[in-house]
Length: 575
Image (tube, rainbow, N blue to C red):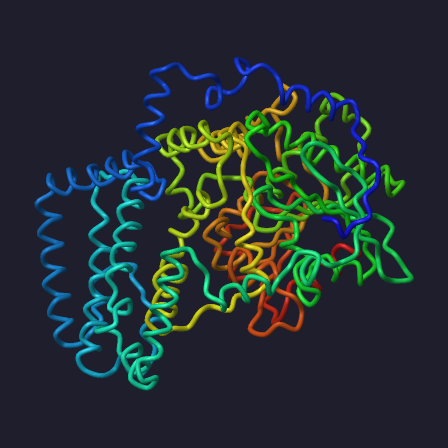
């Protein structure tokens, strides 16, 4: 962040107290990061050595899921007969070139890998139909009475992973598009694909890879909105972006990005920078930039991230802007943490050391969950066994690496992020050019061991925030204490924060909520600037203390609009 004019760092009493506690004796730390016994060290070394074979997923959790499914299927001859009948029906449908989706409940297919007209030729259309019917079969076969919901979902998920790996679209001799491209290019496409594979295997980039890597540079052509650092402590830098208009809105806005993201997700290239959009509309914007922790930060906790991060930033915004009222917005886990902070500040007894913070006039949450009872497919990778394995991984290095986190997210999008990409790069010879969002995504972050354990256990396993059991300052917080107007944005194809899960805040507070459902995924739906094509969103407001409306009923009633949701939020914020 050398581009910023840096001011003198400031920390208050609470900040110094939290920083001192972060370096407290190891024996006071969470069990996940305390000193090991020799036997615990042996267990950790064995389990972490095996973990890479299963993609850093717990092989025990996966084995239990498939054992649960297999034992219940073995004890259900009636269900076996049903599946055998279904298999025969789908096999017959395959020979008739009929996608037998009518025989598999809840199965629908719109696979873009097979849209090209070349797939309509024999024998490729037979292979395509057979693949679709295999998907339909496993969609039904994973459903066995008696299997726990979590185990059933794991079996279904990894059956899809296996089928995606075996797809005829992934191989040269079974993909007509690849074969045509190879012939038309005189074999040059396959030669380029071989070079791409060799570069990835040897980790020696091609000249094209080197050129692509230098296309987006922080402070060069991304994250270039002029800003100034007004606070620096052990965990964050707080950047102030001045408004670029003659008339300025009176209250500033604090943005809290997720700590697993680099801050410039909301300040990418000038044309799609949300920060630039806001300052061009007269808003004074402050944004947290989280420190990328190292091994020495293994003891940083969720309390540290709340106090040194959000609460210190709220106080600094008020002091720097000379105001006692501010707006706040949080993205992904940054929104979850912001909601925790807002609930703590809404209590009668505030967090010690933070009694005089500015009032939060409004709260905006982007793709942020506060109820983790239905976290979507990401929840498949979070159970007691998986958390135990992650604790072993972070124990040795002091943090969770970005590459280790990326593995779990990649599982959610293997079709696009693994198999389709490899097909295009290795078989078609087309190296991805990337964009600013992809360059940001490759700029990974790390998570301190203790904090990572605490947020997984408290939020995902115990769902403590939704049940008013999340502790701040030795007292629980309740989202029902929130009374300020709220604006929530979720996306249609979000595998990290499914929109129906995000929507659940409606039943946890009686405050006024304006809810937006926009097209796109977890990041692409948020970074959706005005003027970008193929964008739409639905929006509706629930008044304070209004009656409950379920997510599906909201979807039917919400007003639909074309374009970006940014202007709607900016108008709401200005009002």
